[in-house]
Image 1 (cartoon, rainbow, N blue to C red):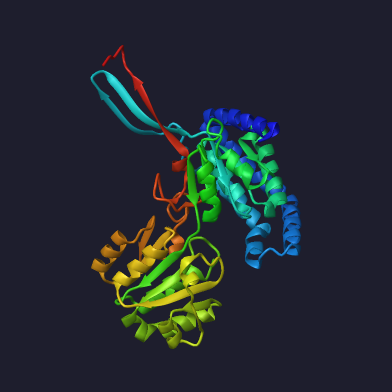
Image 2: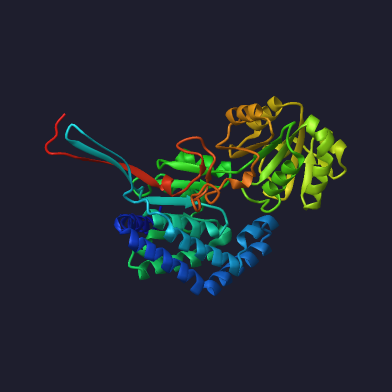
Length: 414
């Protein structure tokens, strides 16, 4: 690690100390100024993004990834809107979780910022602004480690936010983008336990596991989402269709989009052909088991890999199963774990499903796409954790806080 990066890490550490001790009102004003700055500099962001998109398109970046990289004027408005929304969030800094007074000792447990939060993320510009808003609201500094595909967009966004922080009277170094150095530098950053307090890694398992091996900093993995829907024998056809379509069609590239549809054989006999036709009409490519293929000419035969990974595309795998047990076994074999849903009118089957599948989020008659910060009442998220400990599911402000105990008395001894 070169001396410039080490110096920058010292600066962000100092910025975290100041930001964490700023008043709630100071951070609220900073968030509002950051929203204004994004709108004022919209053309600069769009110009930088166009350069990234043109460069990566010429280099052969996949169309689906280009779609995630590309932003429009309305996207910047949405980014600014999230800063305004974050300004209205209840401030968590100093929040008292519990208090006790006994034997002359007053004890309270309170929330305080963890310090410097690092985020390793894909070429998705909204990650910069979502994470910055949540970090400023929670009093944490943000270290950004983005993708080379979005380097110009990320750079412009980071500079706009840094300047806005300074204009609001807070240190601009509280939002810092670290460029270059490749994956080796990311692994070095993960070993900076005295300068970085938490590292959130979004993306594939290969990079995540390599970072974990190098890390001395706590790492939370926000990995892929191989999400399943299981349509049970008693499912209401209209509900099953609505939930399945909503779980995949609107945002097929999202990590909370459904990737595999499992269907009980008795339900499939009567209802699956019509559902497959609807999914085909919605523009999905369908890949299925031999039984599914026999029910519809729209379905291509699936291979083993089709059950294993997140498609990151408008593609859905479909499998007919003999029982709830087979559905649970399939999910637990291929799960990531992210979000798994059962559609049924049978409460006993629901209880069994929700207790048996290994997932951070389990749902009954709901869309998989409800798994995000907004759906969970958090406002937004830094990512969606696909590990069991210390927590799984959407990573919100509450997960960026440390618990600190306050003890006070008049010479109390043990």
